[in-house]
Amino acid sequence: MMPLRRFQIHQPKTVKEAAEMLSHYGEKGRLYAGGTELLLAMKHDLLRYEHLVDVKTVPGLDEIEIGNASLHIGTTVTHRAIEQSVPVREKFPVLAEMANHVANVRVRSTGTLGGNLCFAEPHSDPATLLLALQAHVHVQGRSGERTLGMEELIVGAYETTLATDELLIGIDIPRIAKSQRAAYLKFQTHERPTLGLALVLDVDGNGRSITKARAAVGSVSPKPCRSDQADALLAGPRDKVEKQLDDAAKVLADAADPVDDLEGSAEYKRHLIGVYLRRAFVKALA
Ligand SMILES: Cc1cc2nc3c(=O)[nH]c(=O)nc-3n(C[C@H](O)[C@H](O)[C@H](O)COP(=O)(O)OP(=O)(O)OC[C@H]3O[C@@H](n4cnc5c(N)ncnc54)[C@H](O)[C@@H]3O)c2cc1C
Image (cartoon, rainbow, N blue to C red):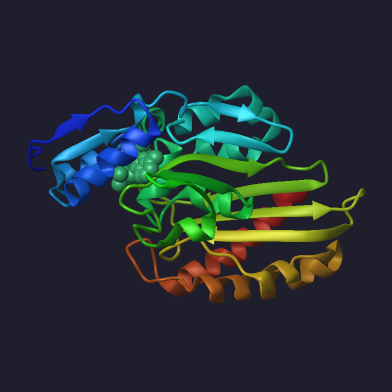
């Protein structure tokens, strides 16, 4: 590892000030949160910035709030804080459980949810689950604020739709209804997930029928992915859906279009999607 090149850290006190700094420094500057990705890439000389804008000095972005309709997570909330939050554990157990399995405790204690999403590293657990949970992110730049769905934020490997002066300020996740069951499973042999699979099912009162389904698969290709066609195959009477799981997995795998990489071949990942969709289905309905 190379010694870090010299850089300056700036400490904005408001989101507007941070946006102005990002605009001012342009390609020489970058937003910095926990630094678990950014500083590592800079130490390896893969990224070079002369100015880092520390988003953690902006008050109020590290809060978790549960409202009537949704859960709000500020961008600088760490994975560890999500994992340990009592309201999250009570109302969004699937999210707390997912956070509990991100990286190791050192990375979880420093790495933020916003940093994870904005780095758009393809092997992200939260991005996959948040896609299935229909989360929205709030983004603010010099000219104002906008709200994006997960599909609109992450568009490729290490690629988001954020403009140079924009920062992610928070994430909203709709409340999980009493009729909904959610599961997130991941398969991992190295440092980061080989596959993450999230499934949210709306079930009728006795659980014999699935009225609506939303599945997402991540880490197998550049960005998390879902498919309306797969979701349609996952809805209907439970025994019928059970017979359609292989077809749904095939459709989801076609949509994700897995890639060959050090985690495994595309064919192997397609197989994993089938195995993990079935497991997630059983887990969600357990
Ligand atoms: C050893 C290791 C294992 C890991 N394992 C997993 C794993 O199993 N699952 C998983 O999902 N992840 C894993 N990760 C990734 C980890 O989740 C991220 O490193 C972490 O969440 C990034 O957050 P950060 O605050 O450190 O981001 P930083 O490193 O500070 O920033 C990352 C990038 O995001 C940008 N950024 C940060 N905040 C914002 C913002 N608010 N608005 C706009 N841009 C922003 C920065 O400019 C930078 O480009 C692992 C990482 C490591 C190092």
